[in-house]
Image (cartoon, rainbow, N blue to C red; front, top):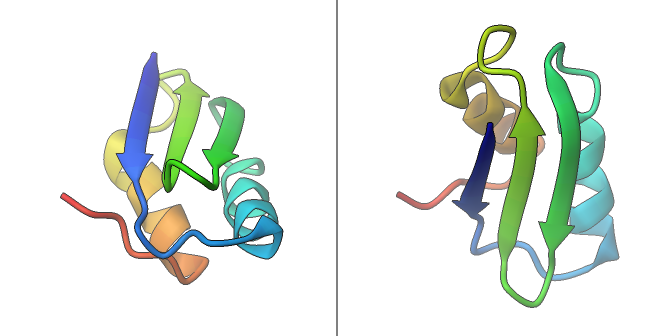
Amino acid sequence: MQETFRVPDVSCDHCKNAIEGALAPLRGVEQAEVDVPAKSVSVLFDPTAVDRAQLVHAIEEAGYPVAN
């Protein structure tokens, strides 16, 4: 499954690395990619291993609030 999150505070490569680094260790995350100009995060994941709430939590724990 793929989900895209809007993350308005993404502004640079440091943000990109921090978010991708926070998502990568989660069990079930196959790929996480931050698009800095679009201020979005696309995550390819196995929904039987990780859910949307866990993905949002990881992004927000890295310091980047997810917009609704």
